[in-house]
Length: 128
Image 1 (cartoon, rainbow, N blue to C red):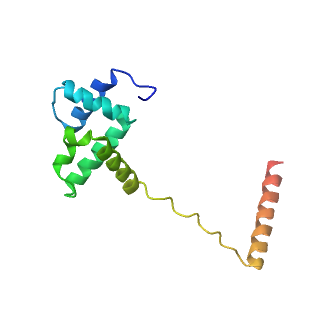
Image 2: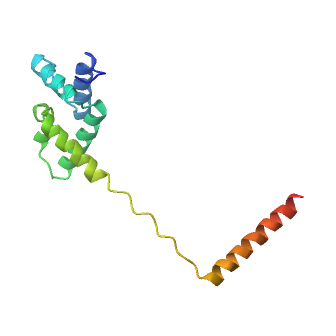
Image 3: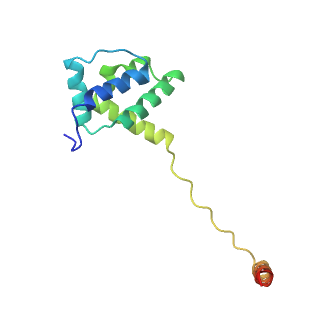
């Protein structure tokens, strides 16, 4: 059980699911047990938001079946974990490599250095 588990998390998770999907499902003992197992697996309400949004987008674009949002499918920890990881992989591309610095030719670098020194000298003069 996660260390921060609270009994009120079960109805809160169910309410959030119903709110996100526009459904009105009763929270019976069978669904409480499913939510309990889901929370015990370490998932959070933020994970639920991310996966539901991901699945809704995939359904709209025709890549997933609407059955992916069925509560009985969504609360299977293995499937949920896979969808959560796919959502993270697909929407979070690796950061681009840092740009490689352009090395200016020596004469150009010297001109820019002198120009910078001249600007600093002018600023100092204006501050006096």
